[in-house]
Length: 282
Image (tube, rainbow, N blue to C red; front, side):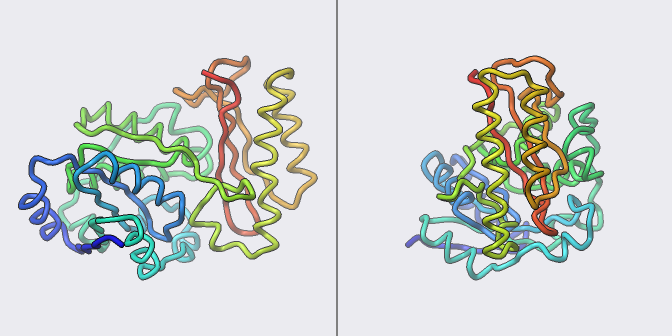
């Protein structure tokens, strides 16, 4: 069991870092809480690679375009802290909205170009504006040397890498592989909102992605997309998008290229789930 220190204010956290970790390697794992094993793989990697690991727990209101989704987002701080204690020594930053966005906060503007208009950018207007602002603000508060993000949010990771380059931020972005349940379902905080029947139905997402990867060996991109959409139509899930994209630009592909990625968003009941899988080797 590790030691957990919890800080709720910017001043108290920065005081701790200045006094104990001024010249250390500091890893940041930004989360919105409702932690699961996928988060723990990020925490473990940070602990292995840094002198100090900070896990932020903050449900960021600026990246929700649906007020109901924000309200229903699962929150369980006690359980989150218990999970983190099992990992090792961790600093938890659990600020209020006012700490992250004080009255004098100036909103960051970043033109993401086409990257911000496709997939999540298309279906969740303003979402990436919120992501850019909260991640940039956390970097400003913590000044990490490394920051860890899961590849489940494939487009989000691309946006954060783009932001880091555009703002010339001195932090290494570390993408971590998707952690999947034994069933194949990608771990997600939103899974906590699914009942047993829905968890079973949601498996069609990973099934479709794996089928697509197999089909990519012999079929065209359009054939793979049509096949995937057909499988979703026969399921109980509501498909929002299934796209095969360039891993760097996130633009739709007409021809297979190394690293081509299939990205999917679908509703299981009222719960929106994301997943992705690399179709071709790099």
